[in-house]
Image (cartoon, rainbow, N blue to C red):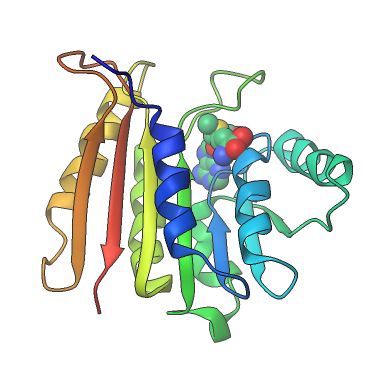
Length: 190
Ligand SMILES: C[S@@+](CC[C@H](N)C(=O)[O-])C[C@H]1O[C@@H](n2cnc3c(N)ncnc32)[C@H](O)[C@@H]1O
């Protein structure tokens, strides 16, 4: 069976959605790979906001942009649970893409992971911040402690979304392996 890279799959869907001048949010900056990807897609006329609770993630992201010779996006040292209040109101309902890559900072402290409760608060806000036709992607990793519950609750959150307003899809990376990563993609229809 061909193994699908879910991160690549998420990027491919985002590429089909994000255009120059759009607004995007990276809800979990980590080492800044996704933030750089989003920034390149929206170009100099677009806007990217990024969140992380770890100062080292903000620094790593800043450094990634410095090396890429690109101006850093707006980097916010705060939980994504505060997304609604941290993103200026003028952009609410206008965000074209929001990415969540859950879990821990690669190369960092594996105990500092996303927590189910704040993830769900953030997802609720993300649903409101998205523009019509906007895309929300969530990479979840059931393979680490706490990650299984988080992935389950994210799945439950997705399945209670009103089908009139949101289209939800789950993509699995490998068959029959509960610890394999999962990609949730949600499109806002109206
Ligand atoms: C898997 S990493 C993200 C990878 C990243 N998108 C990249 O491209 O490198 C997950 C990140 O989520 C961050 N995180 C954990 N809880 C958070 C929260 N409540 N709000 C925002 N970020 C959080 C962690 O500090 C970690 O850096």
